Amino acid sequence: MKKFPKIVFIGSNHFSLYSLKELCIKQYNIIGIITSPDNQFFKNQGEKAFTPVKIYALQNNIPFLQPKNLLNYSFLENLKKWNADIQIVVSFRILPKEIWNLPRMGSFNLHASLLPQYRGAAPINWVIINGEDKTGLTTFFIKEKIDSGEIILQKEIKIRKEETAGELENKLKIISGSMVIQTLENILFNKIKLVSQKNIDSSLLKYAPKISTNDCRIQWENPSIESIYNKIRGLSPHPTAWTLLFFNEKKFVRFKIFVVEKIRKIHTFPIGFIFIISSYEMQISVKEGFISIIEGQIEGKKRMHIKNLINGLKIRENLFVQ
Image (cartoon, rainbow, N blue to C red):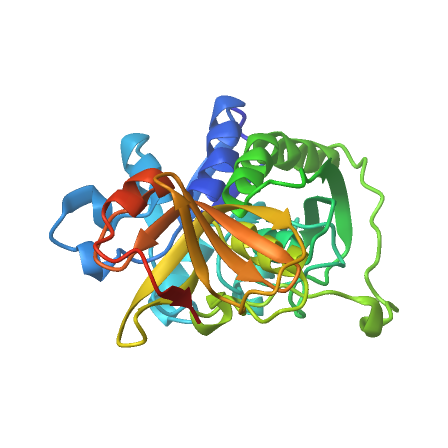
């Protein structure tokens, strides 16, 4: 194991785990990990309550801390005792200066966009929702203003026209570990050429704020079929686009939509009307054509292919979404 530098890794989810594993494979000295508290919703279900990063720490006997409050005195004192040379952050909440300013070599973050574009919590979702054809990864030194520190490295990738947020995340995960390693080694061997994010015209920036449940509701009246299509794939599989499915204007249920195709076609049907064309084809009318459902989930049921979803419908006429 490489004794230098002493690294504290900060992360929680599967995206974080790729970078942590790569650091361990390269035998870097991970002296400790900071990860999120256990999920109380799953507290009686063993490892399901733990973050993927915590599970890896337990499996590999790496010390870890799980602060609820990042400014807790006891937590900060324990973190100081680790005396890290550098901290690496991947997919975690905003850190206070009391944490990122501790190591003598600083703290760097891996962000899933080409900064300065798409600062915020959900860059992978928003680049697809906005119809971008490229994105990438950025590493930067953490400063006080979120995602605004000096850029160390960037790597650009293309976004396929039909790609979902989940598929894009998997592509970025695969290259994230090597990106973190390259960033770390460039810092250690003094090969970095920092790029400032200062003096940027904020009116030219696109942001990636956290997405709420209400943000996920599909607006079928949107005049652009492309916008509807991009929103659905940009929210798939999480947090998932949804609508209300109405039966005869009386009963309605929430309907999550994961995978669709768009069909451009001139028509005179009302917006949101559902056509069940066959046992394996459901189309929803929009202004510029139709959205064809490939995978969906009706409230109270599992996610399924459209053929199985249609087979489970007791009512197949006078259906519409709103």
